[in-house]
Image (cartoon, rainbow, N blue to C red; front, side):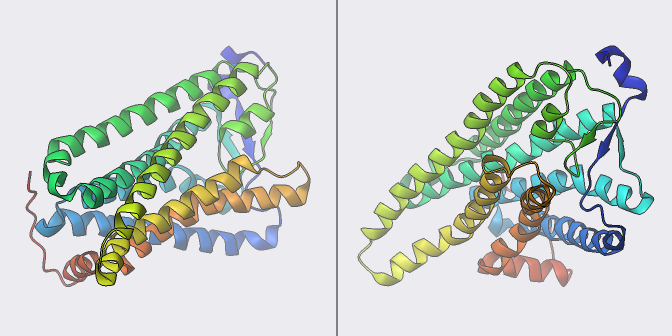
Length: 317
């Protein structure tokens, strides 16, 4: 089918979460619960940071940005999956698919970039504590967050444009529950070599560079912590990085399983790949608020004040 005729009437069919009818009701309830918990949990993190002046520090500004990105990231895929399960329809329009792809890439990459930024913040705080306020000023934090949003939007636009130039045969089934790059390239009727090369290059940049920055930051952090003379001081320093390390491990572990270790094209392998994608797109944003709140006394205190209605909005710049 020519690309010009696709924008108005062309539709894809999403493989979905399961083809078994008896599982649809349970899947709808489970994913609805996970989506609501994800949105409420991350929204509480944002509200707690915004209403407690003691949390107006670079670490928590980045955490609030991460929570916003997680809300938008999950909202890109889960609501459409819920609608499809409820209506028993697997269709998604061509324009809707491209829009979903763009926002999925933007907010997914934003998570990775923000985790690298948070690692840099911990590196400065532990390795250069006397210069922390000067280096991680409010202006510097704003520039870092803006740079993350700009870069992720640019990467998403490039990938979306390259998918737009492809041609697709009618009624193609996307082997996933949302529109992603590799499933779309698999069902394209035209040459995808350029797409594959750009995906290899930009995918390496988006995943590898932040991962290396996180790795280098934590090598310096561990070396600095080991030089602390007291055991209590070392434990306190490690505790400030525990939540971030847990989220980094969860995020990159699920990304690697979902995108760098795909299974074969058999039915069982497709189920395994879908489960890995669900871990990355749904479970990780769901767990992030619990990881940060349960391991952080200041965050727990702010959340308790939110739930009790004792808040005061006052942003410090």
